[in-house]
Image 1 (spheres, rainbow, N blue to C red):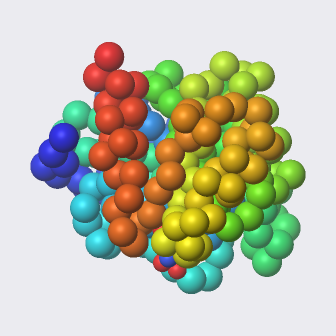
Image 2 (spheres, rainbow, N blue to C red; image 1 turned 60 degrees about the vertical axis):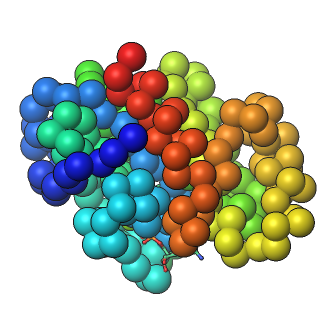
Length: 194
Ligand code: GTP
Ligand code: MG
């Protein structure tokens, strides 16, 4: 599958400021610094479409990107970072919940986890919230390049047990090596172009 174009459309916090829901869309959610923005850049093969940073909490708005003039990728602000000001953290819940429950064109969410760590309580809360609210979600386990190949299976198994799904329903990914890129794109296209 070829990504021909990817352009930033706008940032929003409030529902009224989202771009019109004209295209199907997929959102990317996960802890601060887990690698959401890097994963989107990797999918669209553009190094700097989305700003990435070593400093967690970089993305604090909902960012809409139009892909191939046909669908949106939506970068959601990360959660679980203590140094983000309390006011901003308090805003995160309602902002994300409004987006996830009210956006009519949302087809599913890529839930990004770090291969090096078991899911945090925040990760598990969000994961269960997706299930309770019938929002399709795929767990994508990223930063595979950060650990030895021989450890992948054990880490994937641990994460899948914690989420309560088989490992075959998760995607192993690395933005650095592009591992998992075509597998994930394939799954997203099933959502976007049914
Ligand atoms: P916030 O917007 O702050 O919530 O962070 P984010 O989830 O968008 O993370 P971002 O993509 O900015 O990446 C955070 C850091 O992790 C950066 O230093 C990236 O270079 C690094 N990173 C992201 N993905 C990978 C990966 O697959 N492998 C490695 N080695 N580093 C990665
Ligand atoms: Mg980001």
